Image 1 (cartoon, rainbow, N blue to C red):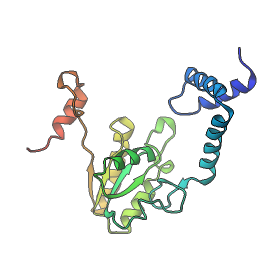
Image 2 (cartoon, rainbow, N blue to C red; image 1 turned 30 degrees about the vertical axis):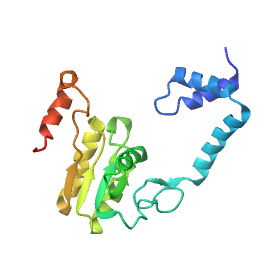
Image 3 (cartoon, one colour; image 1 turned 135 degrees about the vertical axis):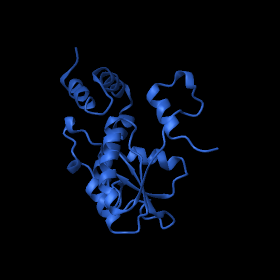
Image 4 (tube, rainbow, N blue to C red; image 1 turned 90 degrees about the vertical axis):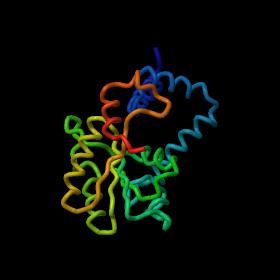
Length: 197
């Protein structure tokens, strides 16, 4: 049906998260139809990313420098650290323009069945940051799924002896949502995380 180079590209594209074989085929054929300059621009952007991007030595956010712009910002509240699974989670929280503390990116979530143990994440580095002092609160903002909850509980157990305040982001019904269509777990979390009016 297709040539070896197309099959090779499809195979490589399926290695990306959320890209199955059909999506990879669509992307491959779309790339083939693009003007050469646009396709090469995408390829060069990937090469530049792999060549220049690195993880911040403090928080493990993506940066081109040794320390990311957030860690380097003296206006940030250094007494708070928000723990997220991935750099993409950090970006979403930053876009709210509400949180003004520092971050710590775990680079994943615990999943023993997938071979992701605490040693593969940046959990020890978080504990060391807290031990250095100056941190008053750690906000755990892992995803509200089994892996995220397991990770949050694991981190909580490690932080308890250090005497730092540990909080978990609230979750529940989305703004504009309808209670009638909420699942039981979401609704129960909404009730548990309720605020006084």
